Length: 267
Image (cartoon, rainbow, N blue to C red; front, side, top):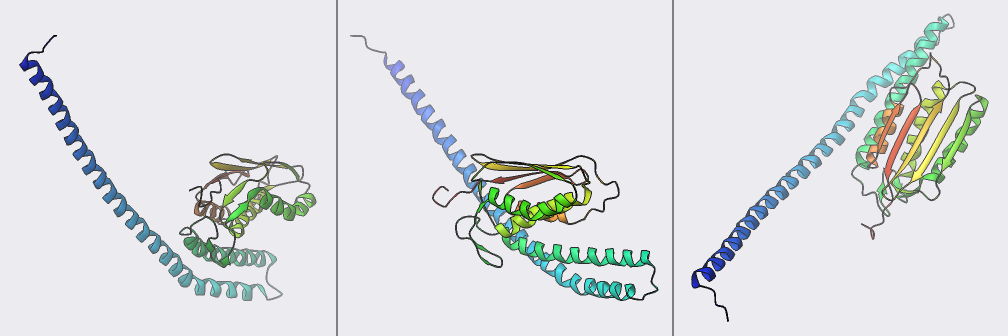
């Protein structure tokens, strides 16, 4: 039988103690760092909540502050355009001013609603501004519904549609606002399209996200008047649904990515 010297046993035992002590100290250090990170996350969340509150208040105040002067300017523009001897050029400019004011008012109204939407739980039976509605949206069905409404205008302009869509693409959110975003994007494309253009739309679903691309192909109107708010409003709507929108307004190319629907049981 082989026996180890006492000092070897002692060294082994000492080594084990040192390893255990090192492990204990590392554990204490990591636990301390985890507590610090948790505290920082709590502080960041509180700051984000405060910023969201300030954002909502700011949008509300901006809307209240601008509503009266915008209405006053619109009424003045309408009054100035009424005299029969008013120049057609001046009337056209005043009509444009009226349209722009309406767009600003609509933008402020929807931005105020979106400030509330961003704080919603985009899962089953969420409560949305304007009433309760299902949070499960079939994006492929919504897309076809929207395109059917725009199809007559496209045909009258000599514009073709090419559509490639996956079925049963489900996302979480507000059907009303998502349709609003699609309408805004198609509205911007309608400003630049000319006869012979093609609008290619592709919708594909994945495990984690869905992707929608809307691409205008062909020549564009060089003098097209673009809205300053439509695409930005669509971007804010998509952002409120935890997604993103990229695009080139001048060429009519857009890409949307949104997270797929997840029920409470899956989360």
